[in-house]
Amino acid sequence: MHKNFPVWTPHVTVAAIVERQFGNETRFLMVREDTRRGVKINQPAGHWEAEESLIQAVQREVLEESGYAFSPTALLGVYVSDRWDKDITYLRFTFIGTVGEHAVRTQLDEGILSAEWLTYDEIMANEAIHRNKIVAQCLRDYQTGQRMDLALVKDLRTING
Image (cartoon, rainbow, N blue to C red; front, top):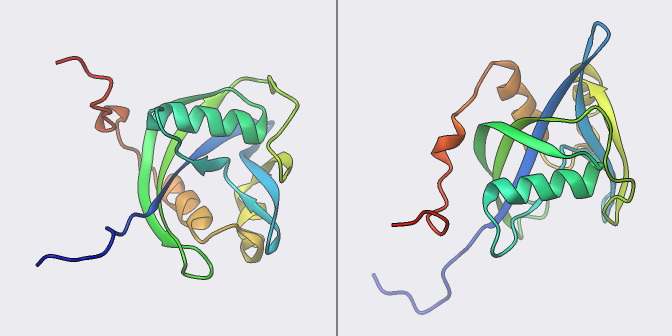
């Protein structure tokens, strides 16, 4: 069937799950951000920009939002979710990876209030202030051991052939 209107396109975003041990406690890197709907918590995340790969996008977003240099090790999953007002649909690629011991950048993106290391329980206890329902779903999937090989993420623009 031929349609005479623009093709619907979701907004593509990337995010990172970063886990670290602090003594006997496991904590996750999260950001606290000031949004139009108040202060929210989220994994470091943001929009995929033109001329960068998904891997480059998640590395950039983690650096901009948390100050840490991110090295992806796996793809957690691909998530589809509507914004709170249903005006935008997001297609989110969530990566798992590591960061260095210390932040390498002190200036964070506009709107980011802080980067914080929170426990799973602390994050889930604050579900009312999650940026999106994807935040909790990603953590639950991570806790179950869900992992996909990064080789599944192919950018044909960078492959010679």
